[in-house]
Length: 73
Image (cartoon, rainbow, N blue to C red; front, top):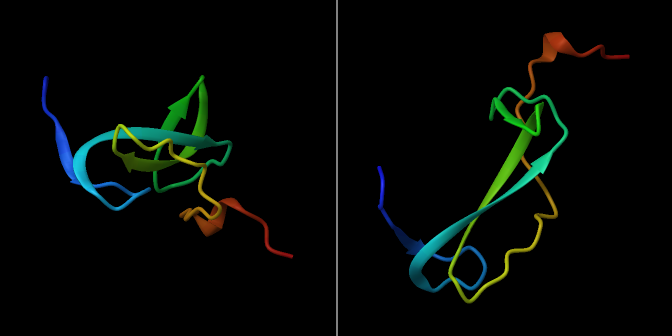
């Protein structure tokens, strides 16, 4: 939807505000995102934050993988 605004709780400071989205991309061929960034399949983590906060890269990420794609030793 063009011109729409997201309002909610900032994931950085916890205040209710108009939110901006920042994406952090990882070179992981996951089945949860299905995104392509710079021509490569990637996983991303989304941080919704207010204009006063600068989001930090997550220290942990949640990834869904298809087990049949990977060899288990």
